[in-house]
Each structure stands twice: as structure tokens, then as C-alpha cells.
Length: 216
Ligand SMILES: Cc1ncc(COP(=O)(O)O)c(C=O)c1O
Image (tube, rainbow, N blue to C red; front, side, top):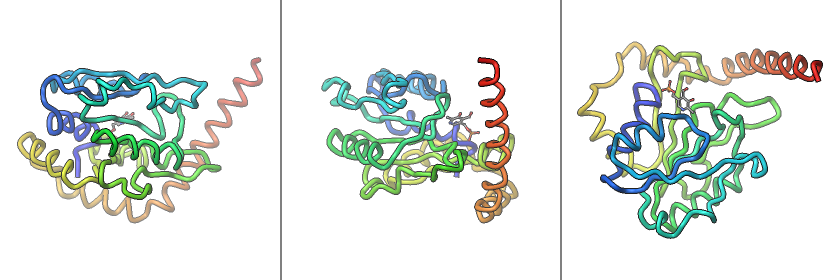
């Protein structure tokens, strides 16, 4: 359990890296990745996300030296700010890359359910063997509009999670129990609520797209 996924992401760098280690971060990206990597004393290697590549990074372009020195590669699918989603093939490639280079793959899945109706949510942990090398961050902020409640979670590789818990338990003492219970309740009803909220988002999206198209 995290006090928002941001808290877990920031503490992950302190928990799993040493000063001068490399971390691999996409660009553009949620600014907390880079800021918290710097706070932990890491070097940041940037993977560009481009329209031509459907905003999926080219892992084959990462230098050997970076692969040797990197401890974490962070991805964020569904992606903020591009709106791109991943697929089983790319996540499988990522897991293979993580295992071959002994680099933890951390997927920030804050928006995992906030996708269009034609798509299915996809967790990196659905890939076989993912738990050997990957963790995934979840958030109640987007899915249930519980941003101010500050609650999220991290799941996946046990060793990595134990280290994050060792760090964070010296910074905080957990979220207020009623908020944890409300989050558990929300997750139990996620199927119903997520459909409801996605219908509203899809309606708004259509309105924006139609309006923009009508101006061209
Ligand atoms: C990509 C991404 N990850 C994580 C977060 C943080 O969410 P939380 O409220 O769970 O800390 C945000 C918030 O805007 C975000 O855009």
C-alpha cells in the first residue's frame, strides 16, 4: 500500500539504487521520475518516445554501458502525456530486456483502466515471468477520482517491494485505515465504476475530437 503512487515511485529510487547508478526514463514523462532519480543521486538516461514508434521506446538503442550500470527502467502505460498504450509484445520484450540485463522494470500503471472502450486494460504482470524482474504501480487517483485521498499500491517482484517497504516505513507509517478500507471497497466494485467513469470520459473525448475536427 502506498500513500499515492507518486510516493512509491519516489521512494523506489532511494530503495533500489546507489549514488551514481543509472536509471532509464522515458521522455516525455511524468516529471516525478526524473526529479526523484536526481534526489537519489542517480544518473538519468533518457529514452525518447516518438509518434513514429507509437510512443514505445526503442530498447535496442540503449548503450551497452548504460545497460551495465542501470538498475531501473521505468515505463508508463497507458502513458501520460501521450495517451499511448502498450501491448503484450512490447511488454514481453521489456521483460526479456530486464532479465538479460538485470534491470528492474517498473511500469507506472496509474491510468491502467482509463482507456477507450475498444481497448482492454493490460498489466505488465500479465506477461509470463514478469514477477521475476518487474513491479507495477497502481493508483486510486485516476480510476476512482480519489486523488486527494492519497492511496495507491505497488505489486510484483517481492525482493524489490521489500526494499521499497524498508525505505518507506522510515518515512511514513501507512495511510489512515478508513482510507485503506474505502480503497478496498472501491476496488471490489471497480468493474461497475470504471465502466461508468469511462463512458463519461469517452463522451468528453468525442466532444473534443468532434469540435477540433469541425475547426479544420
Ligand atoms: C503518470 C502518473 N503517474 C503517477 C501519478 C501520481 O498519482 P498518485 O495520485 O497515485 O500519486 C500521476 C499523477 O498525475 C501520473 O500522471
